[in-house]
Length: 347
Image (cartoon, rainbow, N blue to C red; front, side):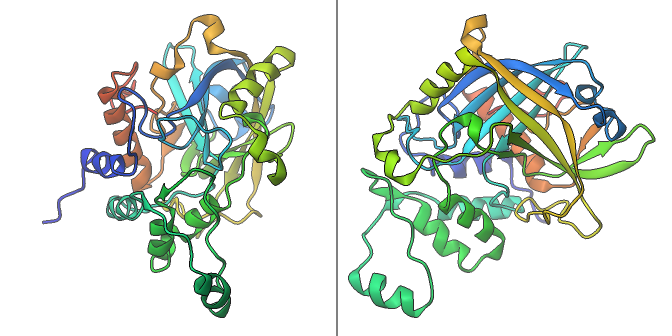
């Protein structure tokens, strides 16, 4: 009989991708910045979902911007998968979370896939490409050369993942997007995707498969390539601190509605851009969490901490992430590790 892979096994596999990890910190998205604000639903949101955040009253939020890397040293200036985790504080003292990242797909479809991808992504010393490969083999095979590593980086899991993606189609979109990651001028100037499919319940009881994303009101703007070298290792934090002294950072929450045949349970596959999309409201980030003595680094964020009116799809990886985050939170002694509904937690 097949024995299901546990969250502990998956977390242990991921740990091998994070050499030098600092104790009592998140295994992924290690470096970030805690912020506070509120969410205001659009007038039409309540017609599509009965969840409390979409009923009209301003919902206080605690959020965290982050870099995806588990590197013990901060590197805002390097290409990376950025994250935005938002905790909505509901009227009944319960919370719900929405976790998102700058990639629009996830790199696994099953727990078994996750272990294989983690094994392929274990960092190894990177050898510079030979002249023959650069000038003869790659052009002959009509393949693009791997993107150059940032200055000072001598080990990487990227080449191993790229090789694995060559024979495993489900991870190709994830690998390509990760390889094309840019450095945003601000955490407030990039889009974030929740990746997984959820089920939104409407007032009439209709259940719709949906995917959420945050779109920056100020637009997407990467750092020009010739300016990256001048950026400090903490420039995103510095920029956000300065930004919030002037005005709130704003994001529009978009909810795409799936059509029959869309990949509802497979986060490695994107949906067509032609899907009906609803403006569900606006997120206003207006101050640093530390100003209210809120220690966001200790808080738990979890993709399975959901409000009434939004349910998990059959996505195996979504549920696994909930379990992994709970385990990771408990290991670092974070706050709020058990879900309010009895599930998992952290980030």
